[in-house]
Image (cartoon, rainbow, N blue to C red):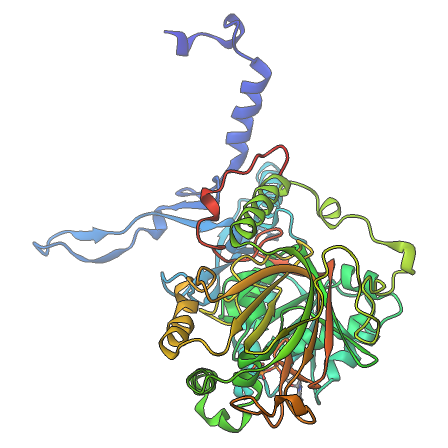
Length: 544
Ligand SMILES: Nc1ncnc2c1ncn2[C@@H]1O[C@H](COP(=O)(O)OP(=O)(O)OP(=O)(O)O)[C@@H](O)[C@H]1O
């Protein structure tokens, strides 16, 4: 039989390769006691242990104990750490509390005593090495984390959530954590402005999206801002009400699962946006809104007692009132057609697949040293400069019946709120949506309901663009006489950046490709499904 032929007689057999493969298989399994083995599988560690086979009751005749399985598999993603101390091999892992996709996790472990022979110890130590290689892949081990807790975040629960759900995961993963509580608004900006960027890999905020926004702006104030934003990854442990950063990068609103995702997170460059107003430059990572979204959030602070429903309530009140927010808008547009936006998304996703095995240093690209590592200069000037006339800029155009101006740099604005399905972390483009405020009421309500269903992008009344820069001049609010004739003259206005209230005055946005760094579950993409139909678009692999 061919299978039993010695390999040296088989002209098609590569003896060395077969031998290597046999050794690899033998090396991947470790005997840990008389009745137990640990095997490095494709995606999981397989634990085969007769001791796991427990009697759990009796069969229908009540005679024989029923047996459970003697195997268990632990996904590499969930393995937090493995080590041998004296003769004890311990693997600590994050165990989901239920089978639901967004289940919280808690730390669990398996432990075996090895025989103390030099041979076993050496083999086991090699095996642990290989397990950790697989468990961490491209992700950095023993991350050094500066952890900021907003004690008022998440209705005051952030400190408790940290102690109960987050700290045990970081401790089990052997991360070095330096905790600091913020004592006032703007404290995270001060901490990050002073941060020693060589001492930490990550700044994590146990908070809503407000603290990550402050952290980015703190790093942006350093004289070596570009270097700091490149070196230190900004992440969120979801303790607020929206938690968009965590939903986009880790696909979870659970603190413990987010902690696991940070332990295993890979560095991903993130586009950041400069917002100029007057003489001030603010950096944004998530969204910029004017009109109905900004007002539903910032204009309903007096309704905080309503919890999360205050946003929907504010939205409906303004929709039903057909509120309009007249503005003048000029934009530097890159793509203004929905099918082209889908094609762009498909191309970028193919590119991500191809670049996945690349080293992180290659993914980041070279750092621009022409600015002495400070913030990049503004290519289109500030709001105070004359409107650029470069190709691609539209003239300043009146939008007399605008209902919503909404720019997004991430897909999800909160759980079940995929307002920007085509957004990508580092395509160098912002996703802009404009909607008229005078559309019919039924249409408006349908629009609101279409967001969680994922059909918002395809609605005819939703205008979508990919832009590099935008200038907006509100023509409503205090001191604007020409708003008088409008159906609902507004006494004031709201402009929101990353959910934070900004002065209500003209502004200009400019995106900086990959200026920031975050940790994500998958290299270079969000945990989102993308605009409907993008998978059906053929994009050439070679020229993608
Ligand atoms: N000790 C503190 N006292 C008062 N304000 C603080 C303190 N620490 C942080 N802040 C401010 O709280 C604001 C909101 O924080 P954050 O977004 O993290 O939490 P949240 O409001 O619970 O979440 P969400 O924005 O999702 O509702 C931030 O802008 C920050 O400046």
